[in-house]
Image (tube, rainbow, N blue to C red; front, side, top):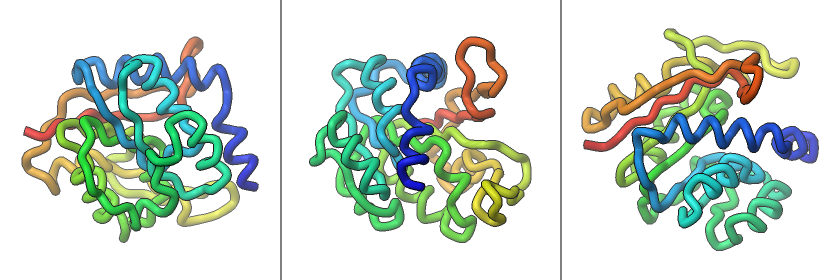
Length: 192
């Protein structure tokens, strides 16, 4: 099963879509020098960011050991924390902390912990890219219940951290003819 998760995240079209995605989502950020992705898998998001920002220092948190092996080829093993987001010890800050398609799988009771990791890891920007819903809802995922949750993740962070401000936001449609994503709503927030 782990190999399936990895292979569904390794695709040339996904890389092209990610390039388009991040060029829009980070347009208001200007230059960034470092990024930490929570739940990086094999690094398709980081690969796109590396193409957009060639001097970008990349770091990642990833729990899947098979994905970590491939991710290490991209950013180096010393830049990866292999383990749960919950266990990641925030020891240094980056310009951009990023999470994409991960919060939707976090038990709602544990979201505050992940929000805190995202917040503490950033010295300037936080980019949250997830399924959106105005009120929290759980939906079936691959035959399981309570494995996928939609809510206003960014709104909750903005309420929790008064020094965060919304810089930009947008939506990418799964039926986009050129650069589809998985109906992702993104929010770029900045510390004031």
